[in-house]
Amino acid sequence: MLFSSLLFQVLVATAAFAIPTSRERHAERRARRAAAGDPISIPNQVITRPASIANGTDAAQISYSTNWAGAVLVAGANTYKSVTGTFVVPTPREPSGASGDHSGAIWVGIDGDTCQTAILQTGIDYTVNGGSVSYSAWWEWYPDAMHSFDGFAVRAGDTITASVTATSSTSGTASITNWSTGLEVIAELEYPYALCGENAEWIVEDYSVNGGLVPFANFGTVTFTGASAETGSGTVGPSGATIIDIVANGAVITTASAGGSSVTVSYTGP
Image 1: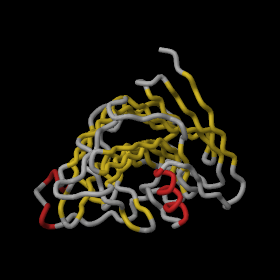
Image 2 (image 1 turned 135 degrees about the vertical axis):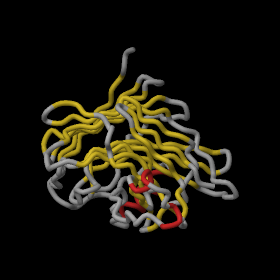
Image 3 (image 1 turned 180 degrees about the vertical axis):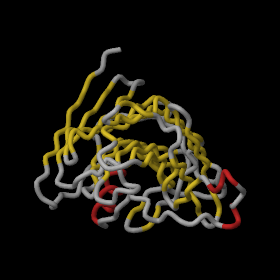
Image 4 (image 1 turned 120 degrees about the vertical axis):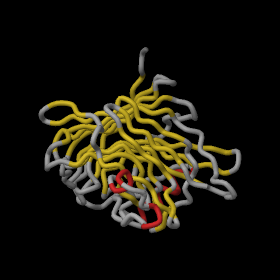
């Protein structure tokens, strides 16, 4: 299949950033999030497993968070050079008994779990309100704001490959390929915020706006296939990764698992 590509270049020398703007509703949300200075993707609210959901050995092997669900590999500094995964874009729904905007994000990334200085990540956001569903593709090198791949179409059922590569601790690329439309976008990035190379991640996230988590959509099941991470000594899969599930209001609302080359995250909430 032939692909057309669109290249974005971002060279940043200072910590001053303009809030991204767009006519789309997603851009307004991104702008509010950036203005808040919110570390939207660092799971710094990882919580102790509630006693009510302690159910033996399996539970003891899972970490619980207020905002991340998926799998995270953890290693020493400068281990992970790239991360990739392919998934089918879900059709989100409002949780049972809920109405109004409900959202979430699906992404792959380097760092943000044990490394707290920077994250390189790319993926999609989704929002549902009644019968209306919208999507936005983006990249982020935290602590800079999230930036949209404007004009990159994403629809329910599309097959998406998301990849990030660190060419150094302060430079790299973020790319998304939509195999259903034949379009690929690549952002070439350079920032002053150094990655640690300690974490590789495949995540479904309940992100935050203005310091609070957005109402989380029922995303059904998302499976990252072809999930892999490049290290200095070769390619590894997510087998043996730390599994993270989301807890909301004292209840586990996701179930995640990881195998040799796949990560599956399912919504199990109301």
